[in-house]
Amino acid sequence: MKLLRLIATLDPRHGGPSAGLKAITPVLAAAGHETEFVSFDDPAEAHAFDSPAPLHALGPTPPGYGYNRKLDAWLAANVERFDAVFVHGLWQYHGRAVRRHARGVRPYFVFPHGMLDPWFRRAYPLKHVKKWLYWQLCERHVLRDAAAVLFTSSEERRLARLSFQPYQVRERIVSYGTAAPSGDPARQRAAFHAALPALGRRPFWLFLGRVHPKKGVDLLIEAYARLAAEAAMSEQSLPTLVIAGPCSDPAWERKLRAAAARVPRRGEVLWTGMLTGDAKIGALREAEAFVLPSHQENFGIAVAEALAVGTPVLISDKVNISAEIAHDTAGFVAEDTLDGTTRLLRRWHLLPPAVRLRMSDAARRCFEERYEIRQTARSLADTIAPFLISVPPTSHALGHPAASH
Image 1 (cartoon, one colour):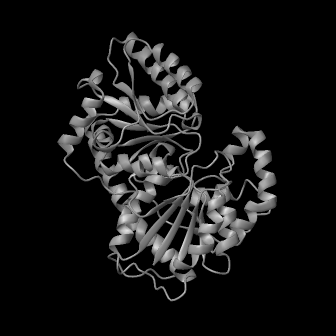
Image 2 (tube, helix red, strand yellow; image 1 turned 30 degrees about the vertical axis):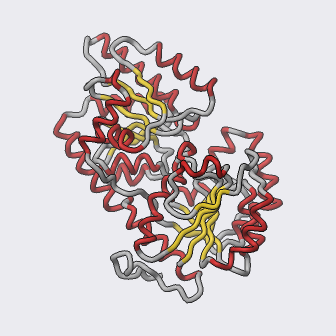
Image 3 (cartoon, helix red, strand yellow; image 1 turned 90 degrees about the horizontal axis):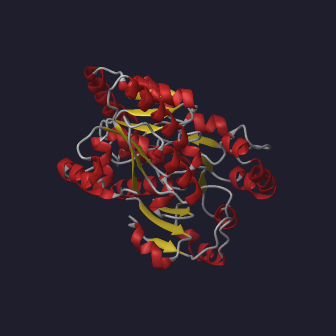
């Protein structure tokens, strides 16, 4: 198959979708499926994004809606070269453009990437009014006319039905995940410690991701401060809290750093900024536990990355794969509240070492059985094949017999 992926940006600073695409594309290529990307990045910057396939960067594009006059001409000239077209994300011009140029010509598929979650309606009511208007005028037609709307969990699909009406889509669930890290673990650990020399060899808990209000980092710091106060009373030490990731809102970052500065002396919060490459993998390998008390998380690619190296995850019940994590005993799950986050940290901190080791093994198994990238590629190929013309399911090429439909 020849696949076309349209996404606002492949910049890794913008989170999981770009990471997921970069992981799955080489696996699909190994099975003979070609991919090309269209993004709205500035070509002068896009060369640094490490695209795994040809990237047509049509920017620079104004922020927000992302209207790009070059896109219509590009699609008119190129859409017939592809067997399937994928729209990544909602509420931007590229979905509308794909519907205009691909409908009746080539099947197109939409990945909402959690953007239909009702949490956004509650968190940003004024933006929801604008989205409701755009839904009535445009977005519902984009989803209705898609060959399928692709969700990465049953929970994402359930939540998507609650935000907007009328809601008429062909729903499919596809696996999602990432590649198990390669490279030398010792070198990766050394790269992380070189990036954060202030840590030394002390144990730590890791938050890794965008430092955004929806991620619950404020809850994490406050819950950590509670445990640090308890540790001070009992004269015990507490693992360091490491916060790794970019923040695009300086005012939010200042607020978080001020809260971190008030943590009692038995605790310590260290900041790394964005980690990439060996330093990122080393952080995941070295951490006692990965923590994500998010208020809304469609999948959480960093959760899968932590599982891949055997690091248990402490996550909120608003991470859409939390039920699977709890079922596989690959971590702990609690509410996205201060009390819930405090329970997550305390429960882990009191866990005997032997139980932590068993949970580490369970984390690796969870990843291998659910989120390893070859499974993701098989799932995607088999899901879209029935919608294509003369393109058979390709699970056999990826190592397993074709799934039935």
